[in-house]
Length: 139
Image 1 (cartoon, helix red, strand yellow):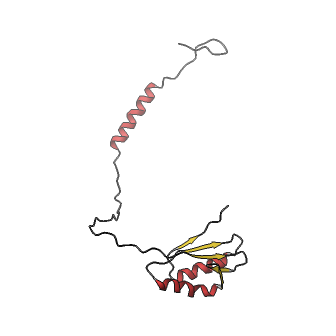
Image 2 (spheres, helix red, strand yellow; image 1 turned 90 degrees about the vertical axis):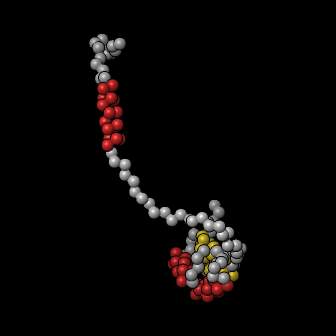
Image 3 (cartoon, rainbow, N blue to C red; image 1 turned 135 degrees about the horizontal axis):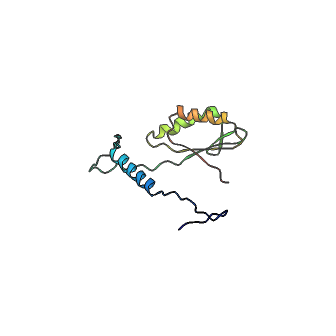
């Protein structure tokens, strides 16, 4: 069926795309067959099966809340504390049971200085605190 053009009623030439599609499918098949299938080994350390039951876990101690307000004042479990005393408090908590440390929940005011938080994180790292979390404010 021929289509008439708007300007003169002559036939409009159409491109036959069937041979183009056939050639593309043949090329696709050739590339799929000849392309080497490359595989890269990935080393994964999978757990090995064991008949021993897992050791009983201790109940974690209650978390420690460390709050920093906008003025830079630090509160250790809601008690005002100087930043230079935090190291001793953290080491005392770890000394109670080094294998079962409490979670240190840090709540920082958005208006607080970053310097104070950086000092607290450095003190926690030097005291070997392993469980540190940040409290997200409710909006």
